[in-house]
Structure formats: structure tokens, C-alpha cells
Length: 448
Image 1 (cartoon, rainbow, N blue to C red):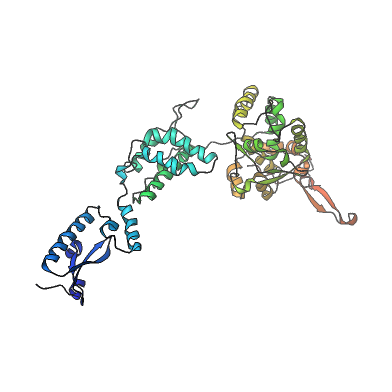
Image 2: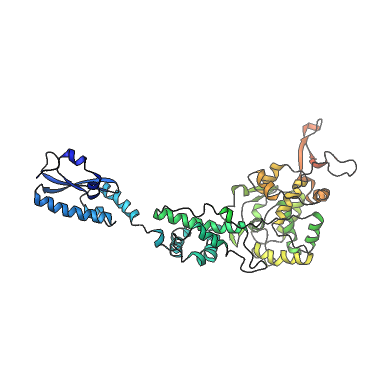
């Protein structure tokens, strides 16, 4: 019987590679097996002498190994317990990938319940964690829970878009806005990506071309107040909350920042904005690092702070009438909406105060870099794009706004030549140059 030599072993063809082969090495009387597993060469001695009977025996055993390999049932460590630990670990990892379920085998609902325990539960406490669960439970699970990941295609997500409508309220039955739909897609994409990563799936990304299929709704425009309109609205705000809303319009602070403001955040010359309360929960970190900021205290701001500090017995500066924590949602429902109804100014929301602060500041010609810092943003672009809407006729309110904000809001320090000892003299920027006819600030008014 002709025996395979070392050179013949290196030349065996693809068919033999698929089925494995029996070899004998020069200088050895033992029979070896050689096959490929996950495209890696595996060569092992059988410990048996090279005899026809042993070759027949080894061939039968090798055929079983190849059948198990091709059926995806081979466990290398069990078939070759004497192999090196490194080699067994290498194949064990690959075998784990091989036995991962297919996209057709996993339902979105089943995977999401495990995802809640393994991933979502480790999210830091905060609005992101709450928002994910609310979106998943309210929108995603009712639609996708009985669908496999293989069925979640771009076309299926487009069908999902058709059911995304307001379920209650005055907009009931109307499609959700583009911004809301994009927010709903964020947890869906996260779960999809986590499943693909966990099971090593290589699937076509169903989110690739969805942008053109999003709702065509326009983003909601936040309208700021004209000055006299603001005073009229303010008269109808519950007196307890009047200094609160005035502090918001004088500083650009939002509801959640007002709710989180502590008495210890009020310093002699500035307010340290660093705490927020969202949905009744204090946030460990602000929305962005720029939101931690210092707001200089002007005379107008000091006047409102004095009212708030004088009546609080809590560590928080702003509370309800009953001394409980100020909740933005309750404020909007119980205070803001009542003022809307009484004043008949119904196109504003509490966030409009921040837009108003920006528009009024721009009208007074405030330095843009200063405004960016006061509002807690990272760039001028953000201020222009989000808060840059033009308010018709606002330039006519410039003088009233200046008196309301106070000249110390826009003043700068300049050294007047010859002033005793070169001391600083405060010169309001807006009054460095006056229009001769109107006696109003002669500024390149920046109203957007």
C-alpha cells in the first residue's frame, strides 16, 4: 500500500481539504489526521501505528469529525481534549459565534426584554433612560414586538411611520413632527445595533435611506414677546410666580434650571447655574458642559432675587406656594396656561422666555460672545439658528427693553483719559452715541 509522504500531504487538493486526510510524517510510524476548521489548519497525531486496520479506523473517526464540523456541531475542546489551551480557547470563541441565533430566530420583543436587563438597566439615571423606556413601551413594542430582526427592514420602518400620530389631545390623529419621529428612531436604532453586535449579524442597515421618508412637518417656531405684550401677559401671572418668570426673561434660564436653583447658587455678583430638575428628578450632569455658567447679577435681577430669597425657607430658591419643589410641568399647567387664557396670549410657552431673552439682548446690541456664554451654548451659530427669528417691530421696543433690563446689563468698563488715578468709569455702551431726534440708542440693532 502506497503511503502518503510529507510532500504529498502539502499538495492535497481542495476536495481532500474539505474531507480531511490521513498522513504519516517522515521518521514517524504514527498516523496523523489533517483537516481545516474555520479555515485554520488542524494537524493531530492519533497515537496509532500506521497499519491498514488503523487507517480504516482513523478514517471512520475523521469522517465523523468532518460531518460534525459541516453540521456546525463540532466542539473542538471535546473532540481534542489534549489540545493546547490556547487552541481550544480560539475555537471556542469561533464556535460561540457559529451557534449564535439567526435574525429570523429572534423576536424584537424577546430581545428587548433581555436588553432592558443587560443594557438599559446600566444607563445612568436621568431623562435619557426615562425617554428610552417611554418610547420603547409606548411606540416600539406595540408595533415591533412580534417581528423578527430579519423582518425589520427599511420598508417596514416606513410602514411604522404611518402609525406615528398623536393619540390624544388637541392634535389627536395628526402625524407626529419630524423631530419627534427622529427621537423615536433613536432607541430603535440602538437596540438594532446592539443585537447585530451581540450576535455578529451582518445585515443591511434599515435606517440608511429613511431621511427622505420622514414626515414633512416644519419645526415649531418659538415666538418671543414684544415688550408691551410681555407686560400684559405678566399682569395675568399668579403674583407668587411673577418674580420667577421675570427672573427667567432677565437671565434666559429655563424651567428646569429655575427648579434646580439653590440658595447657595446665589453669590454676591453672579448666579451659578449648575443644577437642573427634570420630571421631578435632579440631574447629575447638565445637558452640555456649557450649561454650567455664571450669570452676572444686575440691579433688575437683584430685585427679583431679593423677593425670592426673602420668602423661601428651603434650600431651593424657587418653590411653590406650599413650599414644595417647583415642577416645570405643573407650572405650565397650573400657572402658565391660566395666564394664557386670562391674557388671551396663547401662542407662547415658558420656553418662549428664553427666546425673548435672546431676541431682546440682540436688539440691545449685546456682544455676541457674551450672549453665547449667558445662554450656555458652545457657539454663535447655535444662538443664531435656534433663537434668531425676527420679531416684527421689536426694534421699536429697544428703549423700553433697556430700561427693563437695566443699563448695567450691557455696560462696559472703559478708562477715561485724565480720570483721577486712571480709575475705571462705567459707561453704558448704548449711550455712548444717541440719535439726535429720538434720543434712543443709536445702535446697529440686531433683531432676528
